[in-house]
Structures are given as C-alpha cells and as structure tokens.
Image 1 (tube, rainbow, N blue to C red):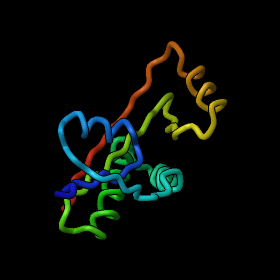
Image 2: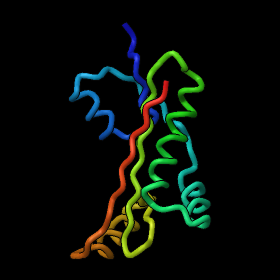
Image 3: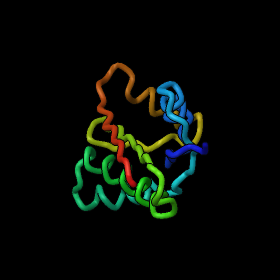
Length: 117
C-alpha cells in the first residue's frame, strides 16, 4: 500500500521524525519562496509566530491541492534573534556567522505544523 501521507518538505529531520513514529510517507518539496514570503509578511508587521504558521499552511495547501485524497503535512520554523528573523544559511560561512552572532545569547524558534486533506 502506498503512503497515505505527504510531507511537503525536503527536511530530512522531519522525515526521520515521521519514520521514527512509524508513519509511512512520501516527500514532495512545496517549492515555496520562503525568503520572499517572510520579507513580505514582516514588512506588513506580521508576528514571527504567525509567519511560521502561514508558511507551514502555504506548503501543505500547495501540495494538498495536487493530492486531495492524501494527508499533507506542511511545517516551518522561524528563528528570531534580537528582533531579526533569520533564514536558513545559504553557505557554511553564513551559518558560522549566524551561530557566532547568537553565541551565548537567547533566541526564539517558532515551529508550526499544518495538516491538509
């Protein structure tokens, strides 16, 4: 029987979590331009918590529209440090720089998961 769940993400960690929970699934990247969406929402004054929710919903909705008979899980995380929303590092140098900036300081991570059918 083919998987009845789609993970609308290319995240290996999220896929591993589903596997560890015994949930068979397939992976389809929703191809949402997260940086553009985040920038737009932030310019409108949308809170980081809500940005995570909106991105997770966009991913689930996009894939679910193609496979309405299956459950689709969309997820996202937004990291905030000193009122700045950080995106995934594009390079190792960027990652090291971000980590060094946050070293010894508190940050917030907002996680969201949305299930569509």
